[in-house]
Image 1: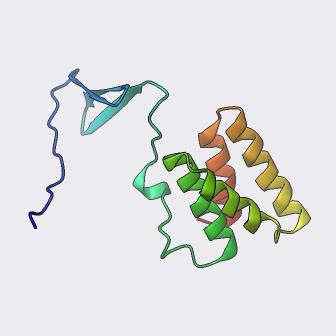
Image 2 (image 1 turned 30 degrees about the vertical axis):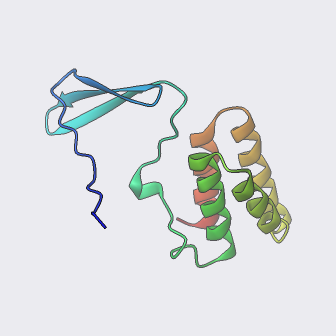
Length: 122
């Protein structure tokens, strides 16, 4: 079986590429490359904000993992698992989870994920 190589894209300053319906433009600023994403159809999350299933070693981290995957994959199954996990939360933690769920429904995914990261301690 032939190995699948990762896609490597080199962009010049101001050049764009499309991922699905989202336009991504590279802007070089000093030592950084800034990616400007124009479009709402592509979920985006920094690697530093990701929790792997292997690293989700507490109930709150598993809750974050499944909400993260719900966002990235738009998966109802991950949402159901997260809601099941939330049933075991304390009253205060459940309020945070409910605030995050409300933020998701209001299309404020980054706020929702930040609340859940804080809850999970990641």
